[in-house]
Length: 100
Image (cartoon, rainbow, N blue to C red; front, top):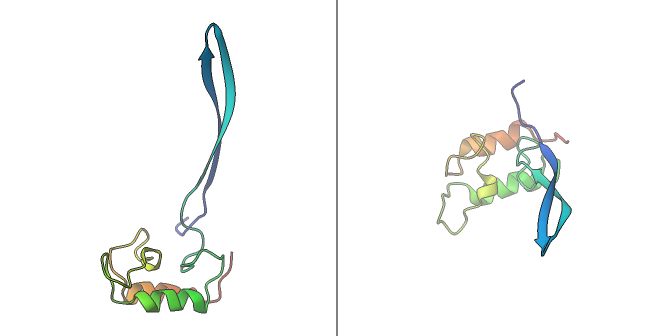
């Protein structure tokens, strides 16, 4: 199904350490949180609200290197396109009020 998803991957690995003739196996847990979640949620608080609109508004018209550039506000297309424009603002507006 098309959309945005929050992906949580959990894997348990064994790290081996050899000291002399003895090998120790230490369990290592790796957790990866993929970006995404709620479409239009710029600040990641699980709701699309005025703070998300303000974040995009403050960065509107910017691109990397500009003083007001905010990579978190570059939400459209998914993964960003290197500029904050009407499509980023519209994405927040269309999803305003949504929560996780």
